[in-house]
Length: 485
Image (tube, rainbow, N blue to C red):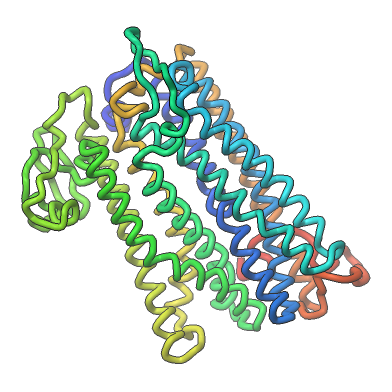
């Protein structure tokens, strides 16, 4: 295992391994929360609008409970996001010291959006029972825009690292004459941003719907659970075919702007046309591919709509300017897993759509709801795989073509970094354990309130009397509230 890790990291200083492991762990943990932060405000407001338009107390109750989830998730995201912000400076001072003035504006945009979203969430939560329904809903409308703005800031910074522009280099190799607009709007920004946003909508929709799918499998088939399932699943299912188009677009954008990264994703060794597509498979150090399923000529067709399309291979650049065979295999495997999960989600969405078009009802098969219950976890795995593909495929560059990862890493001793890594793991385990316990506790309180009938819980108007034992209606937070968790 240690040998594989060293092959993934390639050559570098001793502190490179713990620095990258620490960054990878914190990013992988934080990204589990990002879909709910980016897309749950929109899903909640769609349910809120339905409740107001149809005078539906169950829809309003669901919106209120989901808004509470939003707040809890946001609080956890504050902690994990702040850790990531510090790590950029602590672990990668070479990157921030040389290039921070160029691409740091993206982080500034994200910080302002983060602050704005915190204020808007607080106002939206406060508005239940305290503001007129229409006023309350209108005050919540900016929430999705603030979430999308925060995503724009982060994706802009990452897109710049993939396709850096907006500067010139002085004789010492330092960036000067910075053009902020060009640094913000790089060639990869559009493909990355929309691919990311739709992925967040899909993931959040499938995660929330999956809670109520589990409830359906456990026999909770009242209108509350049907509504809690239908709205987020419909949004996620509608986004799924769109994501296939966007995924194809971003793959072609990588082919044009980062041909060596594309070669790693598709484990292409030699430049040429009629390149085969491999489903999984392992790239060997001599350029051969072991295992996997080979589809002759398909990779060239996918890249340029023709088998005559020339795809640049990894061997076209020096060894120190391309991913290693192990890194390419990792990026390729992650890419294939992401595509396979996306294909399964598309089939699930198609099943849902066909049943609805033919019968105007939800599917009744237990296998459908088993699939829906797994869709949220599958979406989260796909999101993780997408980031592995993006970051490992870019190696050895932290700024593509301009700075290697080994040049950006801190000079702090590796023993100190390993100690920090251990502490971060302990803290993150405690944070996520507390997060789950809060959700479970609030789920139990919601169920206690619902024994009196969810229709009796009115999100607007005076509060009903609190029942003995602290089981007041609507108390608490958690996506599993009323669901099958």
